[in-house]
Image 1 (cartoon, rainbow, N blue to C red):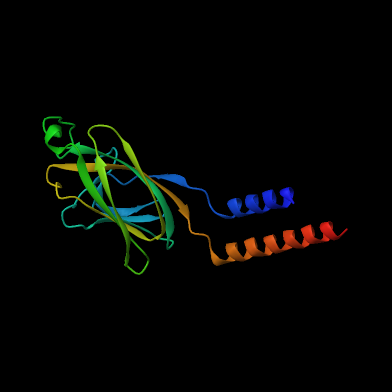
Image 2: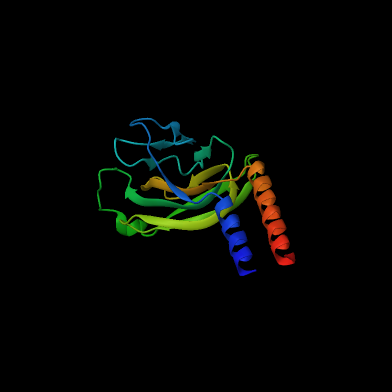
Length: 183
């Protein structure tokens, strides 16, 4: 019986995609485009780590081209607005607050998360949000600094066929276990 339970647990765990960091790369000078299956607006790069701009209007966003994903975290830091690494204003902004709004494929808000960035270190904010299609970024301090965007930690939403295969496999394992018990 212990072997059957262990096999069932292993089957359930492997049926779901594992989280993986998706690095953020954008073309230098562009403010909209795509990367690794995502479409972005108001994210730009000067040839280094991308920055999220347009934060006061809430129009900075990324969306998943394939539909939905399960969000596990994001890695950001904040940098002064001049983008040159000036440290003259960091004490006024510490911590720098960014609000993330998670939406489903129909544009309905799933949840929000407030991310307090501390200058100058990179930080990963972890939160579990299922069925995300897009993330919008907002900050009331947008004109003084911007977040640098390093990566998303996500996993794909399993397709319905994946659930069907999982149930079929569990059913077969239960039948085998029943036959062994009767023998």
